[in-house]
Image (tube, rainbow, N blue to C red; front, side):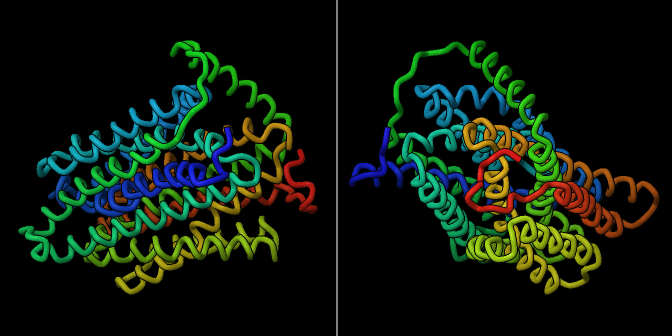
Length: 435
């Protein structure tokens, strides 16, 4: 079904892309912004900073691991044309409701906050699997690139705009009739839930699906496991592909860990929480244009070299981050992350597209997406484990926190080392051919 021609097609495409505008509010305001802040200062109030870092790291790891383990089943569900919107609605509803519940979680209730966050993260990620699977329903062929890019761009814009409004509210609660910063953060959770729900409606009402035969849940699960095993066997026979996937898994885990744990780290060093949020906002708005610039850089110097450049910047971030003393340095590091974050993600996808067999792109990208969902499993657990080990050895909490951020460099070094063993296809016209 083609929806890219005419007014109705444009409306369908916009309705689909607006879901990215809707759910990106969760990644910016909740996941990267206010949840780490609130988790340390309110829900883990009075707790050793190293312990609260470990708790947050484990919560992120549990959420990522559960989604990754469920990805094959969710992929099988997404293949059923009459189930994708229904499951998207269900998973998004879980994320929306759990996010709203965070606003009412009392002081010191870190277990409840962590559980709600894990559930919201699972709803968010699972709904995204269904959202991605709807792309063929709204665009085909080369037009998918444009439509997909529209979704990403609206996500950056929508998530950034609501986050900016929430930051203003948190920094000036009296302007909005709120008593203090804590009340403003709680209201921001409610605003994210409302934003996510309202801007999901265009997709739910405007995107049509081709009807398909109904399949039972056990049959979906069996098909998902069967397809995963078949794809895994094929990947094992293509050395460059599985080496790249392993490299990607390691370094993208580092990228996601930095995003999720940066605010927590800054708080551990005693930096002002309002300034940390502004630094995160800087990263959000720097990221998108720099991702486009990295695409041009990849064409000039080669995709793999450009990825290496991005990983080198992340190594600088880890090393410098472990030694920073001022909030100004934190802002500089936030800007550096914004410069390379989107570029590493975008170039990794295009590099992989040139590696895989041209006749099975959907199959191999399904495997790529599953690997990506394992991201932020190792890193947060690594940070938390290192922080607890250093603290247990008798060192101060700040030393433990500095060691924890430095430990993430292991993921970039290991991922980069594996990437050196992956040969980049040298002829652009051969993109998509098997290595």
